[in-house]
Each structure stands twice: as structure tokens, then as C-alpha cells.
Image 1 (spheres, helix red, strand yellow):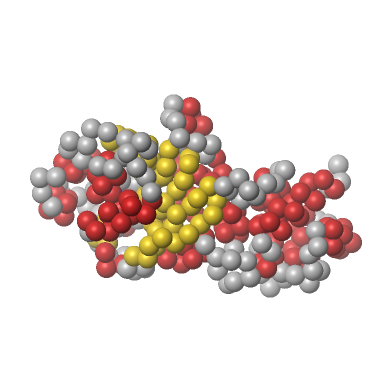
Image 2 (cartoon, rainbow, N blue to C red):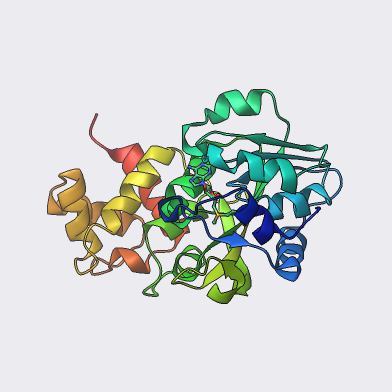
Length: 278
Ligand code: SAM
């Protein structure tokens, strides 16, 4: 790159848009650490969501076979023309990633990894889009707000464990691979961050994913209520039916949803799928 990225941003007259979660990484050591922690290598295709000023994009392009980077803010184009000059294996697509048809995108791409410093205002929808819709994503390494990282990696029965933990667990195991203080972003946000690595797995099977989602959402409807009460409210079951489902799955009738492991949610979802009134 001909000049320091902060100078390029200023020379291009770029105005940061807080509402788009524009907190960029300029620290070279941090960029190298994110790329290394993601485990991507020279034969891999990487999808980045939100290339910003292109610093992580460039670090990725130096390591992998191909980078496809989505960015919603077209006003970054003059900046990226300079910061990504010479990155021949890199393509920037100016589109809102939430509006990308993943089926269509994947029909022309092979397997790919997602590596990104996600915009905080849409972290959950972006992660859930990949978890629920992608068929060719091989793994995900994303920078998120520290509290979100802790929720993604939480164990059942802890205050951080929630619907998103159980939903993601259906497809992946999550691990915090790096904690990042707010001081390393430009401009500096009000929160600290962490990089979460998602390793996709096939071990948690459920016959109807939509039912799993419904059971998880029911379980966290009201944290203060028992799972039985939440099932009655969410599914319109009688108490007897709710109790029958819990007993059949070996779940304590007084249990609260937040104490159930993803495996237990899967067992309950399968039981309801098989035994629900037709
Ligand atoms: N990757 C850069 C870095 O690490 O310095 C920028 C990260 S910044 C946290 C997030 C970027 O995502 C911003 O450039 C923002 O404009 C972009 N963005 C926000 N919402 C988006 C969306 N729905 N689709 C694609 N990009 C988005």
C-alpha cells in the first residue's frame, strides 16, 4: 500500500458512518493474528463481510487463493481502489450481505471460509444467515462484541447461555480465539471485542430444524418460567402434553430452558416432531 490507511481515508475525504458499524482495524499485528487464528491457507477461498478500508481484506489476500469481500458502503470505493491496489485475487462486491441470495452465490462458488470484523449492529442476523442458509461455508472466524462472543461460546446453565448459543450449536462449535481491546480500532468503539472461531460439525442431528428453532425460542420465552410453562405458552400444549414430552426426554419437570444442552433441545424437538397432533 502506498500510504498509511488513515492518511488514505483522510485524503479521500471519507466520513465514518457509525450506523454501519464502521470501526476499522489498522494494527498490523492484530490483522496478522486474525488471519492466523482463522486457519485459512493458500488453497482457500475467503468471503469477507464488510471490507471497510480493506486492511483485513489485504491481509487475507496475501495469505489465501481468493477473497470475495462484500461492502454495503459504496463511498469506500475510492479508498479501496488505493488500499487494495495490486490485490489481484480479490474482488469487492458492493452489496448488503443480508440481501445476498446465498443459494445463488454458492451455485457459482466452491467451499469457502468466512473471515470478518463484523459490523456490530447486524452481528446476529449475519451469523444466523450463514449458520442457517449456507451449504458451502466450511468455517467462520469473526470479530464480534465481547459480550456476543461470550454468549456464542456459553455453556448451558450459565447466564450467557441463550437462544443464539443453542441455535448456533446445531451446526458449529464456537471458541474465543482472541480478545481484542477497544483501543485497537479506528475510530475507537465503546465496547471490547473478541474473535470467535466456529468449527462446523455434523454431530448434532435433528429431524426438523424448524422444530428445533421453535423449541429453543419457546425455552427462552421467559427465563423466569419453567420449560413446561414456556412450552404450554409457545405451543398451546396442555400441561399433561408438556409434562409427557419432558418426561419422555428425561427432562426434570421443574427445569428451566436455559439449563438444557443443545443435545437435550434436539431430543425434545424430535419427540415433539414425532408425537405432535396431526
Ligand atoms: N473489515 C474492516 C476492518 O476490519 O477494518 C471493516 C470492519 S467494520 C467493523 C464493518 C464494515 O461492514 C463496515 O465497513 C461497514 O460499512 C460494513 N457493513 C455494514 N453492514 C453491512 C452489510 N449489511 N453488508 C456488508 N457490509 C456491511
